[in-house]
Amino acid sequence: MTETSEAAKPQVAADAPRVLKVALLGGGTVGSQVARILVDHAEALAARAGARLALEGIAVRNIGAPRDVELPRELYTTDAEGLVASADLVIELMGGIEPARTHILAALRHGASVVTGNKALLAQDGATLFDEADANDAELNFEAAVAGAIPIIRPIRESLSGDRITRVLGIVNGTTNFILDAMDTTGAQFADVLAEAQRLGYAEADPTADVEGLDAAAKAAILASLAFHTRVSLDDVRCEGITKVSAADIAAAQDAGLTIKLLAIAELVRGESGSEGVSVRVHPTLLPRTHPLAAVRGAYNAVFIEAENAGSLMFYGAGAGGAPTASAIMGDVVTTARRIVAGSPGRTGTATRFLPMVGPEGITTSYSIGLEVSDQPGVLSRVASVFAEHGVSIETMRQEIDGAGAEAGVAPLADGARASTSTASRAQLRFVTHRASEAALAATVADIKNLDVVESVTSVLRVEGV
Ligand code: HSE
Image (cartoon, rainbow, N blue to C red):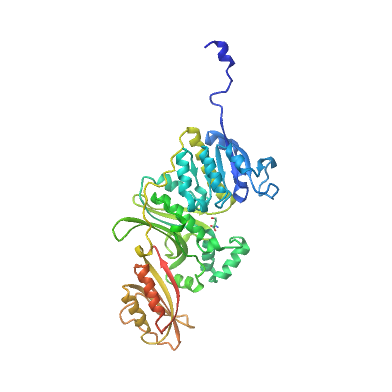
């Protein structure tokens, strides 16, 4: 090689910063914050990522719509497909199933990596996305899909990948935690607190996905898949929301040193054959007020993990909001960019085995059951005998007399527990059971309802952490 030909080569320095083309799909609350961080902190991000993150465009439905953050108008486009086609890294923040799914798959197929916060899509069809990412050696990261700003996906996928997670308990929906916390603090009924939460902007005008537990169920499916290295979809999650939780339930919980939280619960369980399976459910749950999750107030989220070697861990923080969620997205963006630069996209490693789902028949839980009964001699023994017939063992029993609000009987239930001598015609009984199967509990409740001395079963709540 002559000196002349050497001098003719293009003068690109070996250490010239690499440029990664970034496509942002969605310019809403989170998307605007992501764009702001990409633009305002470009230098710092380039230094951390090892590549300049060039925001090529923001795909939106309506270019003229008002935005939370002011950005150059030429960044906006309605051509998501075109933006994705030339990108190295796609940030998907459109939400919903389509067209998000199509754009993510298109990006992965041409080898671009993807960062998304799309819990609905991951919970419904995560397997297709993971397989496509692996097939194309592309990155697929989704820290923002569960519990907003809280680092929980990466700790499960990476930090705990050498351990064996046995259980995950999560407060992963801020709206319901805000409502239950306000009911606990004020003694108000669900409907009143929901109306106030809507007025303050903590609850959506249509709160169904939150209060019926569907949002938490999608997050539970994602957490369970990752924690147990298997595939769990939204359809596998049993789900009950908080709409039936009453002020009386909250007051009774307080009396017993408990609080009510909407928990996403994912656990490894042994089926009747002794083989391992997975149970994933979302429901209002009584927790001791001393449990770390009981201290999670307002709209905050937290995830409590039990692992064989690490023991108990808790992750806590803001579960929603533009800037907090953008923080999780940007963490994924920098991590993804580093791996692209290093030329070593990690395998998604999401499923290494296929564990069967275990239904209610395979799960035992403690229950709290509230009854309104006639206050007369012999009622308690008739109710107690129904528990005994179904092999459900009572741990504690409390009684309150209507009108008096006084506690007449206190746990633990002992032989000869005294019947009330009050002249009031109704009494409230609240039983807490030892662990029982859902089938045995359901049969017990059905038979108790049929007793002529029972006016109504006022609540059935599961208890954890006792
Ligand atoms: N609606 C959710 C919540 C936030 O209330 O926590 C987004 O998942």
